[in-house]
Amino acid sequence: MKKLAVVALGGNALLRDNEKGTIEQQELHTTETIENLIFLVKEGYDLIITHGNGPQVGNILMRNDAGEQLYGISQMPLDVCVADSQGGIGYMIERIFRNTLNKHGINRNVITLVGMAEVDPDDPAFKNPTKRIGATYTFEQAKILEDQKGWSFKESKKSGSGWRRVVPSPVPKRILNLDLIGELARQGNIVITCGGGGIPIFYDKENNIRTADAVIDKDLASSVLASGIGADEFYILTDVSFIYRDYGLPTQEKLEFLDYQDTKKYLEMGTFAEGSMAPKIIAAMKFVENGGLKSIITEASKLEDKTYGSKITLKYES
Image (tube, rainbow, N blue to C red; front, side, top):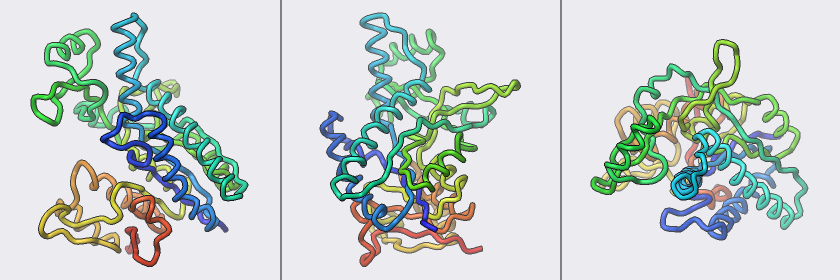
């Protein structure tokens, strides 16, 4: 049987921090990333693609603010904004993937699905919102919005630069439409779904879907997706080719191959940066804990580079 891989595209796969985020810039980076994924297609993999949405959904939220302030247009809630970003980004990836497949003479269907992720409404994260989203405000503006809308705010990470809205980031329990996603992928269709970690939802006592004003970590949701469909491999594409121990310090060391126990040891020691690499490590470990063959963290252009080992393999050994 063909191997099934879930590939989580990092934010740099679509947009760079020092750019305005024009559609031309996003299409350029998306094309470069998809070109690197063709290696997996030619190797015969069935693929499911997930992606981040941080800058894009932030821009949608700021357009929300501007529309309300300038024209009195009612703001859309966060879950709708996440869905909007999934549709827009998914469409861009799908169109560029189709063109890239055509360039290589490969006949594969590509389909985008707006994805929802179930969370626990009693998740402790809802009592401690930490994820910064949207525009930056003065303290006075933030206070007015807090009173009017019930939003929570924290000062931006760079002290003195203003205040931003913060929302919870609960742990995803499962991805909706899991069987359908897996079935489509195993039929040879390239599936794009679960963008931005999925739209967070929960079920009420009548089993109706309710929305949660929150965001979900993209890599953790992708790990839950990969485990749920029984994927063989889970790729997290980021802006570095290797995982490093003590990154940026004199003791920096490239960690090319890791087994589960060593990875767990390094994580508990605080080896990996809490806000950047550590969440990716946790997502990778969750996948192999749940039976995945291996999880690879690397930079997109290194996917085809097997000789120099530009990827990290996490093998679970009980």
